[in-house]
Length: 505
Ligand code: HEM
Image 1 (cartoon, rainbow, N blue to C red):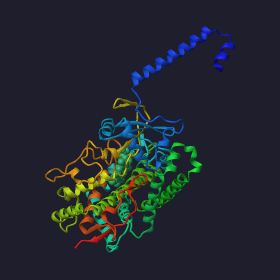
Image 2 (image 1 turned 90 degrees about the vertical axis):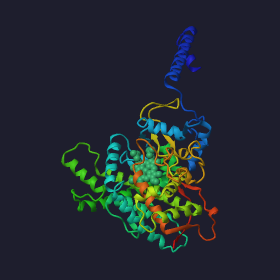
Image 3 (image 1 turned 30 degrees about the vertical axis):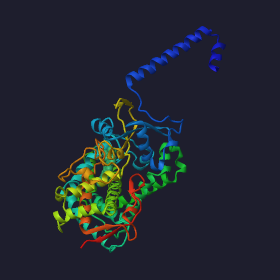
Image 4 (image 1 turned 90 degrees about the horizontal axis):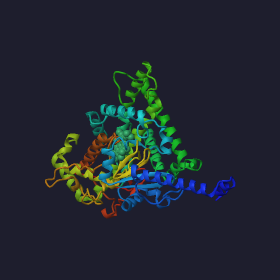
């Protein structure tokens, strides 16, 4: 109206005005028509409110549950607005595979939310992209192979650590205890010895503090207040958890600095003891040969070590705790595991080579990972270009949430998706069978780089513990009372509980 008055005041005739309006309408129709023909349509989703998007229909304390519910309504590719942030969610095996495996490069960047930017400053592996990510990931994979993954080195470290873990469990003399602390001490020691070349005694308070800090940060990173901060970073002054996370991280880096200074004093370029030594040697080489903008600098070392520790401890610890809880809940399945271990390896030390002869045990470990689905909506990705998926157009730079839980519980892929059933991984002859929809480590170019190490840890710790102990609920608690409801943080952990580890005769 104001516009019309202004135009009329300036002496334009009504005819000219109508002509301009008509022209605008035609241009609009042409533009909107061409966009739907050439570009494809947006994935469907609930209608967003201004600013709030779909926040009112999401339970930020259990985001994955809300997203699973929405996938039932909107299908396997849908849009959700987390406040002003548009996210495309992928659900079900076929869709996640199409995106992450067949369109690996297009879906291959990391979406770095404000809290993870505060955490990582674009450095390290998990929350970096481009050349920094490429170099750090390549270096980590090749060095973890030398000091950990796949090779005998890691097998020996895990076997040694499993003996210490058994001693820890024995101290409870069959009385109820929370398994998560001793398991996290053992799992943390594997990463620490790969990184620094040595393990820590369980009585060392430094080890306990490192674990507590990592756990606390992981919990706070998944909290509702931090999720809100991610959407509205200007809320920062009011989000206590955000400041606490940064403070805790500074403390962690101070500790890494002390440990690395210790390594530097005794560094032998001919004989690296672990990942950190290799990094320091490469750093010195790049400095000596004057490499410009080398990513091998101290900050990247700190962030990468922190990434390996954070990504590798909470996840593996949680999976082992789930496996022990499930054994206590399903004693007849525990019977079969123990019968197989007794028959195949007897009292010998379980080694990685045994896995192929222990198909039932292997199936139980896989089924634990499937049902627990500890990273329910993966680690968010971002599209690197405009890309078509299932007939929809997803624009470059869109945030992508892969609902891994809906892959691991896809009704089209699993006979009893919501029930613990090791038969999912066994054929009629009782042999182990691989399943393509088994994706707890995700897939494609950003697939978990610790998968090989994690799988070896899960097998050796689980087999060693089950060989020695019978896991039962505390006296007076029935198997039915053992609760499988997860405690939700960034990962899904078992809710706090106690078990008895009774020595087998
Ligand atoms: C049961 C144990 C584990 C599970 C379920 C798990 C799961 C995952 C998942 C779902 C991702 C996201 C991948 C993606 O973007 O699609 C990931 C990434 C990652 N994981 Fe693991 N992980 C486990 C153990 C480990 C271990 C032991 C390490 C360390 C040695 C590790 C290091 C990493 C790193 C560095 C990334 C980031 C990869 C990248 O961005 O390129 N993880 N993990």
